Image (cartoon, rainbow, N blue to C red; front, side, top):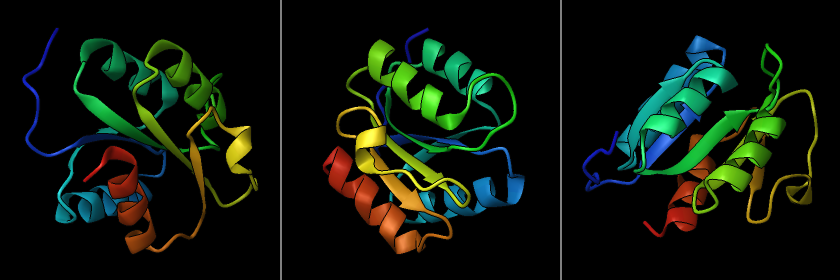
Amino acid sequence: MQHRACSRPLVLVVEDDILLRWTATEALQAAGFDVIEAGSAIEAISILEKRADIRAVFTDVQMPGSIDGLKLAHLISYRWPPIRIIATSGQVKLRDDDLPEGGRYLQKPYPMAELTGLLGEMVGQ
């Protein structure tokens, strides 16, 4: 299913903690992004398979299920290479090079301005 391109960059926020997902979504929308939310990697993959207009994915690393955020990031890089990826965690410290090429890491808790600025940089907004 193809969707009409958004005038604002579309970001998929993947976070199992509903409060953290809502907080990131609100900050991104206020900064000029359109947002789709997913509560798991499996849900995120399902969304990505149906949408061709997602420009970036912001994912938590620690998520329940067989696919965590790091595996999701590598899968996205392989299946949808143009999509930009930012991963976050409060428990695991990653380096940017643990992620696929061009992926970035933000340590939780992160300032919302850092998230929105980084995404803006990555998608050219």
